[in-house]
Length: 405
Image (cartoon, rainbow, N blue to C red; front, side, top):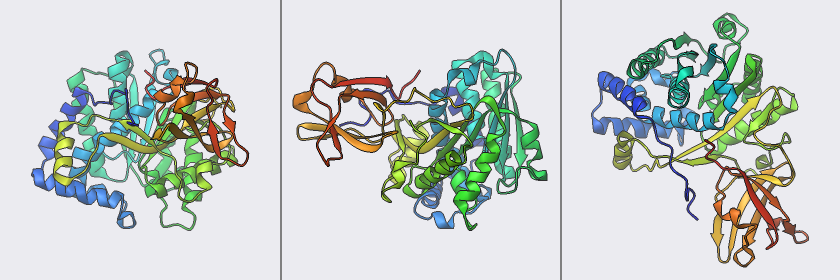
């Protein structure tokens, strides 16, 4: 089954593309083939050669150029997908007051730009109230963040928005001198950590514990209605590490999971060492990325990532119920059968529907995709079987499709 059947792809706004193109033009040191080579090298560091990835990699001019032209649009788009999934009032019910965002491991302002553009495209009256503290260890990356922010604001006519760059190492204690400005600028309506948690504390004895402690401290900086967004690469190792951090935060009662999880129990994807949970969303890449893909041999027609949206007020994306599931795989069309893996408080299991059992009450099963939240009533299981079956008189109701607004 096509993974994005009927789903319009996410696209970047023309304003963002123009701001990025201007900075790329000003700072261009590489020809087209040079960009492709730099992107391929940085991609290997992010995936197959992660052990060689060092902090401050954006201080390398080739890495910085590759990130700006290729990886920033990708990662920014992932953040905007998740902004769509957050409670809408978190983002717009500020009644003209400042909207505070903390962008940690910001690089050239990935999270900052994502929120600025998201607000301008959907709630333009709020964009001028946006205040972002962008934190990174690279002074050059923060300088690029300021240039991109200013370029976007000029192009869009936004006045009043403010970006404050802050250079520091996130492995230093937040309650120490280096973390002072971070705490003083809170509380935050949104805290974003995109593709950087996995890069922290990799050389300490208990990296999961250290990352958990960092997030626990950051959660105290959230406004009562605020949300922390953690985005990680959709690799098995980085995703499973995020699952472990999730479990420790919940065990310590630091927060609850707004999304993607529909329960607070231990992550069932950790039971089998070959399992991990990730998202995949349709994406229409800009022409510059398509050109690099063609030269390098990549295919970037989807956004793949693992994530957590964490809150301290107990709010969840839907009301939880033993018959409400999140689809955590693609629907697989077998001979006379359609199956998917699902997850909720009952654990991770496989559910299928035979073609001959299709009916008016369960036909919505065909519309489910990875990430869909669905109510399924009447599932049957044979004794000692892990496969659940949707019978002809079973009911399938999509509670929340992956496109939310």
